[in-house]
Image (cartoon, rainbow, N blue to C red; front, side, top):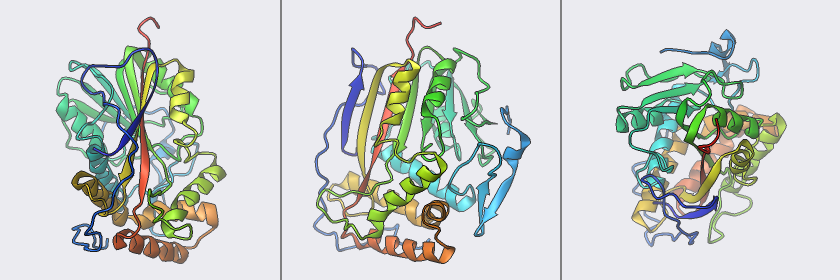
Length: 351
């Protein structure tokens, strides 16, 4: 499991399965064989209930990449084509490794009935959760129709914009899961108020967000490197579209949960390495999958945000991505980024 730090708001610690013990923020150590790059990841690269208009099904093409329609308020900064979707699926596996093989940290009951996955993307988390809880009814929602048709019988996908009023009834959901909404939410308090509304009393909401900043514990990420510039590019773009990439820095998910009325709020911070440089075997595997996810579609991550933040052309993005790819493969820059998991419970005495 990745290095972690725990924070909490509330009076008692959960003891049921699914919770994660507190860890530490120990520096990540590079391996002695960091110069030997034998990584396999070094090569180049349904049903719908809608709360929005039919324009959400329209796509646009920018620099040869497919993006969600920019009509209305529903938007996402990354492409939604196959190349990006494969990267998202690799990210899912990497995050599962970060969590020590878990799909959730909330203290969920094994007889959980109704589960909602907000921003389901390719649906891979919802599929895995539905397999693990075959008696639960799992629903994944997203603005892009990119989910597979063959899924577990207890899973369905619906088209919905989570920034508008959700179509789900009050007090109807046992567990609301959301992750990597970074750069797509203008109003985090409004989002969590909707989660609170649909949660059953005693139900949980759980949020996963990453920091765009690539850091190091040994000063091996130079200020003039592509890695060091990764975070600023995203944060500048987020500021221009009023959809922040600073979820961790401002602790927005936790603050929004508190404002919505959730209690017993817990948070876990994890360090996720980028590349195969860590000495620890588990951390090295996490880093390899982070590298694989990036190399699958570095350009897709950068194209839209760099255009917004810096006005970069496609060629300028290509030059930046080539430099970043070289830095990741060199194993000399011991970079990691932070992931924060925050979950909270809706009080039982709320009708």
